Length: 220
Image 1 (cartoon, rainbow, N blue to C red):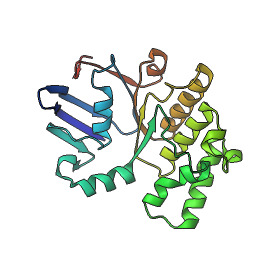
Image 2 (image 1 turned 90 degrees about the vertical axis):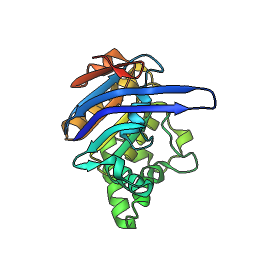
Image 3 (image 1 turned 30 degrees about the vertical axis):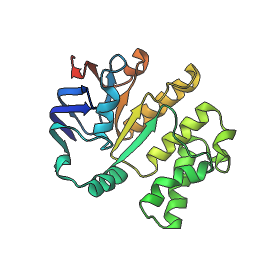
């Protein structure tokens, strides 16, 4: 599904050059669940953002399927990300002004789906995530675990080929964290490819494979 070769990401400031990723090569298979681990500042989030086409790499090759990501224009990158990749963040990144239904519906609006399609898709994922009874609640009325369920539902509603999860249990207690990991495992069993950044050894052991980063390089 994903093939990366000799990927490098360098950040420049006026007086400093920082190499966030250095000569990274990896393959992620369809329907795989991969965990990325390493100390803070080792390049985990940069790698995840590169996979998600949020960040551009400096050198190297990135293929998603048969498509070379380097050849895409900014507009094409945005469109590809919108239609193929779902994101789950540690801080949920929900919109306070919108209710649960509207937060989940947002990616479908970006895809310009019609109203009936959006309603049916959101209702399905609300039921799947067990939060249908919260559809009209505002984000501020939800617990942390419920907010992360909404975030998972939002990532899932477009039926993406790939879900990228950045510390998805980082702001949750152990019970809610376990529930989110159970959901991710189920999504993977249902056929969704998942790449997850985590500091948790217990969470990483839920994955099929663990990639360890150190100073921007894959060490194991």
